[in-house]
Amino acid sequence: MKRIGILLSGRGSNFQAIHRAVERGEVQAEIACVISNVPDAGGVAYAREKGLPVHALSSRGVPRAEFDQQVIQILNDAGVELVCLAGYMRLLSKDFIAAFAGRIVNIHPSLLPAFPGLHAQKQAFDAGVKVTGCTVHWVDEGLDTGPVIAQAEVAVQPDDTEDTLSARILEQEHKLYPATIQAILS
Ligand code: GAR
Image (tube, rainbow, N blue to C red; front, top):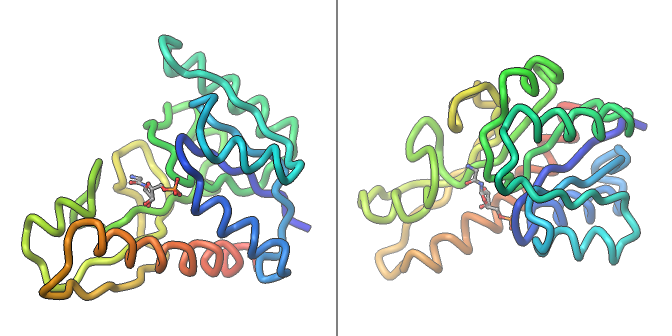
């Protein structure tokens, strides 16, 4: 069984989708650890409830390189082979990328390279595009810049608001991310 690590900063709905897929046997992997840089993130509570190994470390005020060394250590101790960023709202240091070269993936709520960075759904909505979606990509040192692995499209409806559009993108994220992780692992 491959060992995956989840990094998150927030509610963790993508992490939950991955966990459910693991439980159903659709992702053949073990969630070896969950790490949050925000101690009271929703994803931390979910991980505790499910009895998963979880590490809640505040990154506030900690230099990036120092914080990332702690995370690298936890991932290595847990024997993690693939690192899955799931709403992890921090850029990774050079050392982190080097430690897990070619083994870090992320999900982003737009069709990259369009609309990188924060509030991608709002960026797409405000731009008036007819189609947006979500992307799973390899992670490099840039902000949502690594090579694309898989994408799912979502059509923007005339009566959409930013919230309804975001909800439909999230639904696709929850399908695309587990399926792509499984494809990578197999
Ligand atoms: C998701 O929409 C994810 O695509 C996005 O953060 C949200 C996290 O939600 N990630 C990025 O914007 C990365 N640049 P979740 O905590 O419910 O999974």
